[in-house]
Each structure stands twice: as C-alpha cells, then as structure tokens.
Image (cartoon, rainbow, N blue to C red; front, side, top):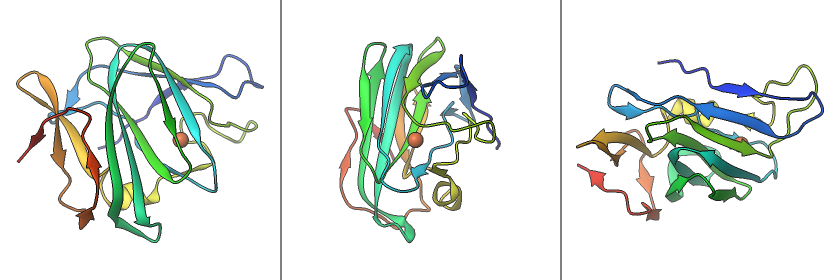
Length: 167
Ligand SMILES: [Fe+2]
C-alpha cells in the first residue's frame, strides 16, 4: 500500500504545515498518515481544526530495535483539540470521521529541497520495517477499534484512550 499525504504551505517561510486527511478505509483500516519518529531532539504539536481522528504515539524501548515499544498511546481527537508529541515519540494521525481531518503542526520544513509531506527531520524507516505502528485503527461495527500489529515483539505499556481492542 502506498499513501501520499496531502500537505500544503501557504508561504515559503511558514513553518506550519497544514495537512488534511481524506475520509474512508483501506482494507478495513482508516486512512492515516505514514507515521514517523523524529531525528534528534525535536518535539511537535498538532492542532486539530476540523473532523475527528485518532492520534497514535509510541516510544521505543531502544531506538535500535523498532519491535519493542516501551509506551503506546491512542488519543481520540476532534476539532479544537491539540496533541503534544515529546521528543522520541513516533506519531501517526488517523481520520475516523465523516469529513476531512484537518490539522496544523509546528514541524519545521526548511527550504525548497524539504517536503511538507516527507520532511527531512522525519525518520520513516522504523515504521516501514514494522509495517506500521504497534496497533492499527480499524473500522468495527461502524466505529474505530484497535488491532494489534503482530510484527511487534513487545508493547510494555499501553493507553488505548477508550478505544476497544479487537482480538
Ligand atoms: Fe513529526
């Protein structure tokens, strides 16, 4: 599966990135961003402007082993909410609503060579190696639910944010 997130900048000098996610599911999984960890000590905040979503955050026990997660968090979000992602926490956004999910973030996009949809500060390799995050967000009886990604060896601490977990 390939997914090309839409991202737009209204001005070259702007650091904020507006990202809008389409609605729907692919193979039962809600449409999501690719997910990444940051290179270095960079944090990030998302401000949700429209729609309903789930933010996934996960921190690896050891950055050299993407299969062991120290902490996994699912956070249900809607317009008006914000989510802070501390350094070291990989993050991924999912649209579970019936409209576009629109959010603004403060991640840096530097210069013409840098891309708002695949920024240079982001590391996608660990997510790619594990075929996604520790849990997928799938549609179950018309509502979002979590489904464990079997590729992960261990997930030590979890906060599912009120979402059910399917077997
Ligand atoms: Fe990020």
